[in-house]
Length: 326
Image 1 (spheres, rainbow, N blue to C red):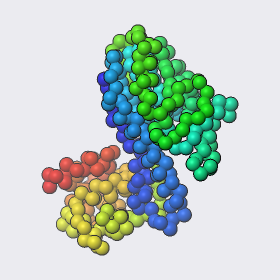
Image 2 (image 1 turned 180 degrees about the vertical axis):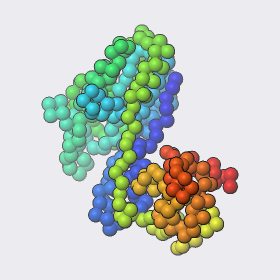
Image 3 (image 1 turned 135 degrees about the horizontal axis):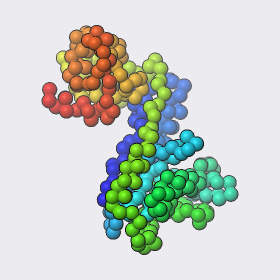
Image 4 (image 1 turned 120 degrees about the vertical axis):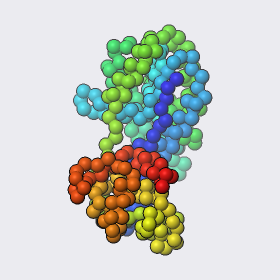
């Protein structure tokens, strides 16, 4: 058994950072808030499905891969929510966290959602998306001759799955276990050895295209500096002897700098200089900024006067041990 923990997508991390900092009067404030709501709901739905894997009793060796992004020969991407791969078959899973009555039209290839208040909305058809993934995976896995199945899982318990074609199974998250066991019965014969299974999963991961960073936002559109979580990120904190102190409520923290610097990495750039640190975080002393940068042992390029520090991914996780050791 091998399944990775689903990580927050880069888009969600970027939107969370922007929510902390974007000015309320910004013309796109409502747009980005809605984007955050949608992406966060999608991630919550995926995590709801992930809990089902913890209870899975599988008679075969298997791997589970989340959020794999593959590119086809036309340079188009296939963003697959979850891949269940065992020695006997592969299951492609598309996850949708949508409420209301859902009608899937096989002719128009559209999903129509009718809300409780009668509002009707159109969505891309998850069945069509899944079929597209299936056809592509059949091409890149043809050397392994492994059967490939697909399923759409609705993770919102209040959704009503109404009309839909019988092309690809679609069901609520509670039906995942039963569906998997039906596939165990359908494919009792192992196609791959355990070594081939590992080889195939590694091949997929090598083809994975991680999400690209979001386009930078003009810093004039958002609050700069270290922001106070105790004031809902409305107040700036000032730096004094290794501690950040809120000028409004006097909340103190050293570790809050990690969150603020991570916001900088998502919204501005993944590198920083002494001057940029002082300007963005309102640090007056060049020596204080230099001590702060050296404390976290960031990799860097350039000479002392022109040094550029490279901020790692998972910056908060990277920085926390340095706070505890100080």
